[in-house]
Structure formats: structure tokens, C-alpha cells
Image (cartoon, rainbow, N blue to C red):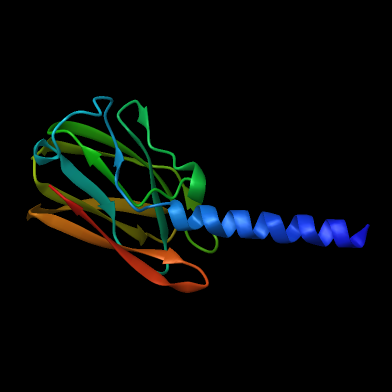
Length: 153
């Protein structure tokens, strides 16, 4: 009986580790049209801050919750115009689910979300990094080293 329980735990751990390797490879789409050209999109990315966890859980009314990593979607593609970005922020003690409005999103630009602690809550602010040809993030893959993934426009 203990053997079966140990096998079940081992299989669950392997599956969880395998799923975490799938998450974050490509930006999720923050819009419905899957055939929309990438050159007419922008990227919204969570800054790589080891003390905070940032996940993009929605763009406007479209969910970007990534099931493979518990909602910690690190980046999404969005269309030009005004966008409402829904987030989940956490650190070792707090969790917050704010939203940000990014006005006048421009195609080819990268918008980075930085997380901060203001003494009472976790907050987020965005920065326009400007127009880019591509952008690279580093996705943690515990217990392995983070892996770099690049999105192109």
C-alpha cells in the first residue's frame, strides 16, 4: 500500500514539474483573433523581480490565466489601443489582484510591469520600453536554471 502511494506522489511530482516546463514559452494572446498579425501587436511583460511574483491574468475581458503554472503568465500579446491588464501579484507574505490601464498601446512596443511594495500592499506600474524587434524573458524552471524565451514581432 505504501508503494502505491509513493508511486502516485512521484508521478504527481513529475507531472507538475513537466507542466511547469511548458508554461511561459510563448506570450499568450490577449485578444480573440488568432490570425491577427504579430507585427500589429505589443507585448505586456512582467519584470523579472526575484522578490515578487507577477502574473497577467486577463486583458480586457479575455482571460490569460495559464493553467500550467497557476496563473503566473509572464507575458501577453495585446492589440493597439487602450488595454486593461488584470494582474496577480505576490511575495512571501502578501497577494494582491490589481488592474492597470495602458492607454494608447502602440504596435511593436514592449510594456513592462514593475511590482513594488508601498508599505501596506503590492502595487504595479507600467513602463513603455519603446519599439523593439523582439523581447526575451527568463522563465524559472525549478530546480533547473531559468530558460530564455524570445518573442518576435
